[in-house]
Image (cartoon, rainbow, N blue to C red; front, top):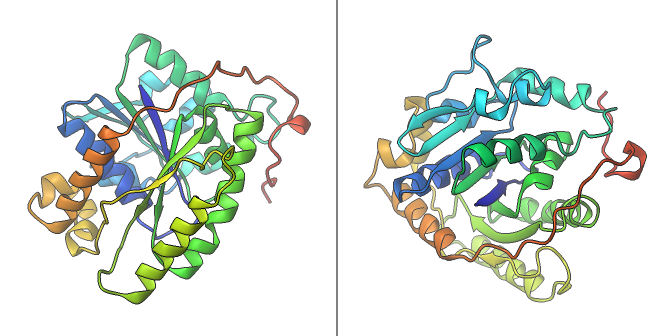
Length: 287
């Protein structure tokens, strides 16, 4: 099983679009996939047609320990399941702030689920922030996939994101590796996109060999701007169901093939974390 956190603390870079279409593309290849929506906006859930109304069990119930992950996941198509989210999940940031096990709630629940119901892939759509929910995803994940829009400000925020992965790797999850950067909303033929890509390659080339991102690759599949990708969420469908012949479907199908071709990172013995909050990852307290 491969557990992949799709994350970027900057919004609007194609993170949710990548999470949904990567999960849907893997399911179309015959893989059993669980998509976990960790964004309180619930956009990944809506993208797949799941409207998490108050009476629908969501991932918030897992963090509040009212339900198990197996009880909140919904089957949305053959081989594809989603653990939905809604605005209630924002409360988890506050409710978990003083919990001594706040960083491992998701990991423990995921381990219990996959012992009873194995999955080939778990894809986690992280919120555009570096708070408790994102740290839970990083603690549970084996891999981090970073969707990146090739713009200057997107590249500037990458260093903070990578620093967070390094901190989680040292203290909570020795198996965590940044395995790839997916370039989204790519505008072919522009000088800016090419320059940002060159800067990113140079950065990765000269990274510390012991850093979690040392072996990260820039995926060759470039996800181009495509209006069909923007339209598909309003129909509750992945791009493969909504417009299977458009360039967006072609780009994500190619990305899926690259992910399938990658080797799963070698796993070390899991670190059991039950330490006081003061010795764990420092995170900002909610206002």
